[in-house]
Amino acid sequence: MRTRLVVGGALAAVALGATGVGVAVAGSGGNGTSGPGYGSGYGAPARPPSPSAPSAATVTNRATNLGPTLADGTGRTLYLFESDTPTMSTCYGSCASVWPPASAATTPHATGGARVDLLGTLRRTDGTTQITYKGHPLYYYAGDAKPGDTTGQGLNQFGAKWYALTPGGGTIDTD
Image 1 (cartoon, rainbow, N blue to C red):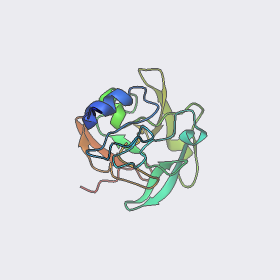
Image 2 (image 1 turned 180 degrees about the horizontal axis):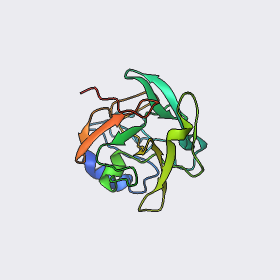
Image 3 (image 1 turned 180 degrees about the vertical axis):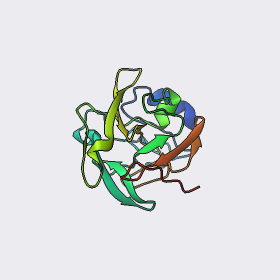
Image 4 (image 1 turned 135 degrees about the vertical axis):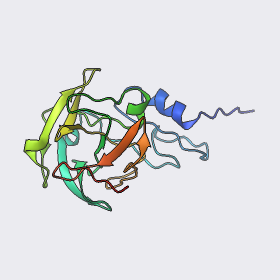
């Protein structure tokens, strides 16, 4: 006889995403098969590149359903959190499990229409380096399953709204 334990999505995201390197978001439902350990439910991968990956230090421009949008070197959409300040990220713990910071192990660079003069970094309280753009700390959204997805756009989570950015550093506000 087999016993199956089902863990709620938020608890799994907190437990599995505690390192901030990968993201784990459990979907509601599923078939009980073993997967890669990350995803936005139903087997869709939702894992941003690790902070040490070269693409994690690249900010570029990508065409999305929102128009020209900032993305990392692999095409994953980058977001800002309205409660952040230019010198401080306010997204930690369970927030960072759902909205992992865009980290850089090396000096980030801009390509494809992103502006190098708007690119920067800040030191997070956990000691990691987070990429900023026009003063906004940048994040991925765990629900974006593939490059070009923008499912985090306009969400109100962890006390404020989340928005994609234009290559000029403006907020894409679709509300």
